[in-house]
Every structure is written in structure tokens, then in C-alpha cells.
Length: 243
Picture 1 (cartoon, rainbow, N blue to C red):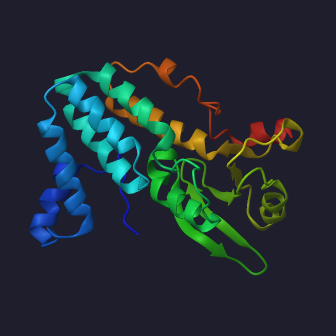
Picture 2 (tube, one colour):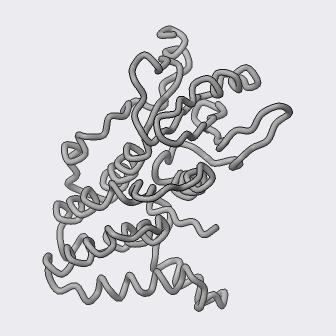
Picture 3 (spheres, one colour):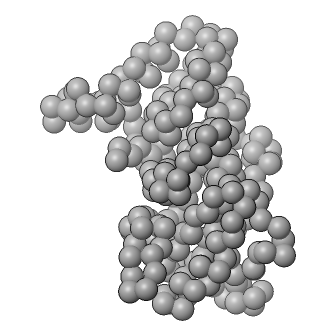
């Protein structure tokens, strides 16, 4: 699977390395070069907005990440405010495509794995579909700052990931539990020792992380619809005190 992190990777640096390594004809190189060419041809804000609208229809998270990375290269030409606005507009369909057609859980797990460095830059992915003796974790990650394992359980529709997360938790030392769903769960289904996100919330979280990282004049108000805990991840002591 091709991965691309907007926060960690750079299109010019990748293309330079690809030329040295003889990868000038691979898929990622072709898409990166095409996006750079599109951005160079954008003469004004109208051109750039139309280009963003075209990319908004794409169903490839990889291409969306490449386009986000390219947008940050033209901040000097178009200004932080306009670029942040475009990223805000694109975010709802970026890392997880719009739910306009059925997709299996495995597809969402792949989207999460590829986008994790931008959605949760504080985490390090370990293994997708990590199999243990009597259970399987959809995505296992690590939180280096607190030396804690992070367990992701993904569900479709409004299915509740909580029972599985609670069943897995005793097999780890003080893990962080994260449940992902298409539809937001009802409050009575949620536990205070589990973090809950919808896929749409993760899209917006990635957009905010990108704007915060690249913009010199970033205002979090443009992503005020993000209903996630800005203190994530909370220290373990706080979780235990609230449980």
C-alpha cells in the first residue's frame, strides 16, 4: 500500500529521491508530478478553487494527501487564509472517502493506517489486523510519549466497538482504547475510558493538524466543528480518576 504523510513528507523531496532511485515511473511519482503541474498552472484563487473542487470528488485518500501537501507549497502565492479554507473544504472527503457506497471494515482499516501520521501524529502505527491468541485488533499503535499501546476497533454504521475494546484491554498494560464508527454513538453507549471518533471527525482532525503545522496565521475556529478532545491523549491517571 502506498502511504503519504502531509506532515512528514514533501513532494519535491520525494520526486528528487525518486529520480535518484529510478522510481520516476511509479504511481506515487506520477500523481505527485501531476499535482505539482496542476498547482503551477493555477493563475489565481478561482483557478485554485476549481482545482480543489475537482479533487473533492476523488475517492483516493492517497491523492487527497498528495494534493494537501501540494497546497502547502503555494501558501506564499495564495496566503494562509485561503489555503486553510481550501483544506477545511476538502477535509470532509479527505482521509476517509464520503460514505456514498458500501465499503468493508478492511478498507477503513487501510485508510486509517495510511492516514494515521496526519490524523494522530502523536502515535506510531505497529500493525494492522494484529492477531493475538484469542482476538484480533483492527490497528495496533504506540504512544511514545506515555509508552502506552493504542488499540483501534473499527465499526460500520452505528455498531458499538466498546465491548470488543473492553475485552482486549486486560491483555495490555494500561492501553489507550479508541473506537471508530461511521455514525456517532449515543451517549449511553460511551465509556469515559474509551475515546470515540466518527470517520468524518478524523477527516477534520487531519485537516486541523495540517493547518496548525503549516499555517503562520492559523485560527482553530475554522475547524470548530471538530468534536474531539483537544487534550488527546489524556494521561492515564486522568482516565482512571474519571472511570
